[in-house]
Length: 453
Image (cartoon, rainbow, N blue to C red; front, side):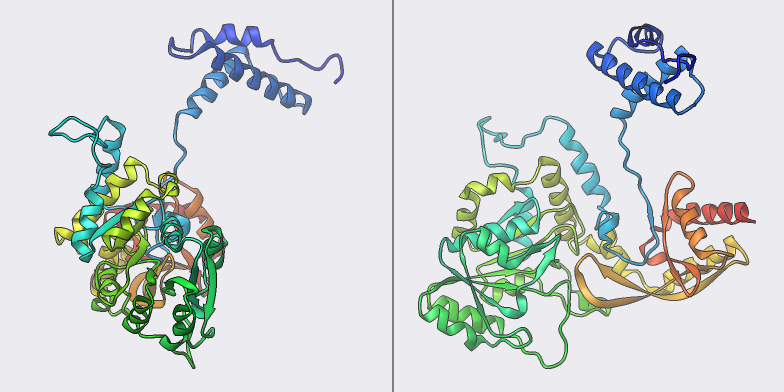
């Protein structure tokens, strides 16, 4: 650096200048560290030929740096993709009561204290009580996600074998694969059947030979196999397993607590159905078709759930109090018969296409000539009901550059709008947009289009 190039002031001078801007609550050590970082950044800028900032500007930069540490940078978005459970947008949108319940975790709460006796009691069990009532299970357990639930369930086999159909040795996401979960649990993987065809008889030999302690069935909730296929009858497999003193574990993946076929979708297996067909433990997710916070939901036989709860790994996999509260509030909506009107995932699924079309036509009229209401197909997403779609409507917007318009509605303004491009037009599917966001969505499109002219 040349001798005539300006140098930043000392850390001590910058600290002295912050006295008029800092509050008594700011710790001196934090102020000093921030000042060092600001001075180091100023030195880099000066070496690059940038103009020097004043002492007051540097002091303000110190305070701004500290303020940034305590301000959250979560940006909410408008999901106009038509994907109801969008993994990259946080999966299921929470019900309002779940958000309010989770917020209560910021205060002291009766998490593990019995209100009547004042002594330590069982950890908050409202969510588990709801699961028992909704599925008819003897007991239930909540973990931090479904992968954890499956790992704990597989642990019931100990060092014994776990029989899995070759067509169900799937990857459940994030590089996590069923064979790896079984091996990490210390059990032995026993494969039966073929990729496309497995029968109940395929399970007989390893179970009869005593080589297996459990059967693991994995519902293909994130893929489909078509053509020359066969899957074994659930009750038949359970009968064979129980005859040889083995247990049946069912991983439903997404898991539905309402019948999906009522809305023109393929039937998604429900936990109570699998229990009735002889499954001993059933696991599923809380943040997909259930429509609440991320969690692993486990239902089944009381003795087996008790063993899972005592597993040392259960403590490492248990959810935080805010998750427990949010899950309980979400499940409570099902018991109250309010899921279709209050759980966003099911509101989106159940909304009649005529209602979505009316909104799309109003939105297109508000935006003007570049916009047209168009029929669309929404997907469930999030590893749920692969290949299934719902008729929908949205707005297609024509512009000189669809890529630029898509980027502009994502980058500009307070809240990003996430859509997609179809046939060189930006398309916004309203099935996944909260009706309360329609006005904001229209205003943003009008403003962005005006700025492009």
